[in-house]
Length: 336
Image 1 (cartoon, rainbow, N blue to C red):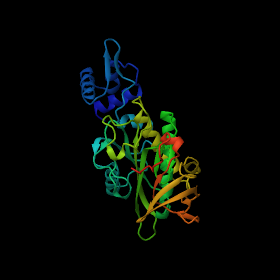
Image 2: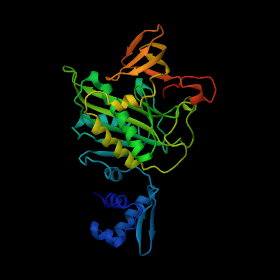
Image 3: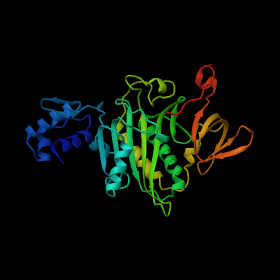
Image 4: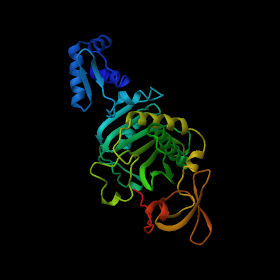
């Protein structure tokens, strides 16, 4: 580990507490000059490190730069590989490539401050600006078949909800199949991609991509997302993104190998009881959502008044006028 990386680890472990340069040098077996150079380099990368004579160095509490050292402080499984990028085309693409080259430990992850080629379902682009949230991909080896892949996405949705509640104190709702909502607006999208054995249909490995908006982008959402996209926090308030990444990984590893769809996925779901517009295949229809079934499929009442089960699909929710639209005419929320 380089002097800079080791110093950052120690500063993160003691965030808000002064560490004397002499003591740091002794622990790391380097000179005080080497410590000063490492501090200078970290400051140039954006870390808020204060120096006070006779007290030493302190990493300010409000510092929130994603780093491997800080994420690892919260990971229960320390064998996982962690990559952090300032910007990357796609965290999913990067992790899939690495997983195909060699067998990485379960829970290995790639996270980025921004993506310039982020992808959502059905090949759509996923807006991934900097200074807005977390873009994270996690590697799993689930003991499931391709037909059970919805269980992985459901586990991921539950994991993100739990982690956000634990770290941010905010409760989110789940929109079938793979989006998280707050106040009628989408704040998180999940994309699960799996490599399967052609003969058996078993999943060899899966990469779960998570795009979570913590704050509204400084420049705002672009036109097509302005009315549908939102964030966990209404205002720019501090959030420990490193801890949040670690907790998401921990919760997902805890949940992903359990059989079936988590009961919490069903209880947190905002779709049942609402009129929805569903796109499945080349068709779009307006139906009434009745229930999320135990296997994760959606039971609806179709346009003929008959019950029908949907295995998957893109859903737009018609929120209640008085609840979400302040008396305006209800319109469907378009998925991002």
